[in-house]
Length: 144
Image (cartoon, rainbow, N blue to C red; front, side):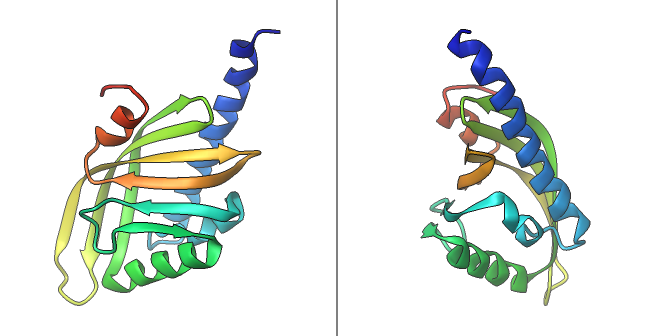
């Protein structure tokens, strides 16, 4: 069996894991990722872009949970609507629309962003999101 034939089922499985994360986040009504923690590796790496409220890299489930909870304090809700899932080896690119409402201000925001998910053995080992919807695609050598 060629390497190409082996990667395709794994790529599909990875897309399904990431799709499930977005589904679980949507079910809790707030749009956060905490409902999907069982799909993350205990040593997950969480990377925020330079323009994020809290830029930088965090490691481990506790740091990931703390970051998600902290962001959740500022927003009444944060909803993600994936537009595109693209598997590239053990990574999955997601381009998504978001809508959110500030907890204190009531200000509503909408936009598009992207994320790059890296998986191993059915678990997320790295989650990196980008402010621009094209950035995750470009990170894996693709264009929108």
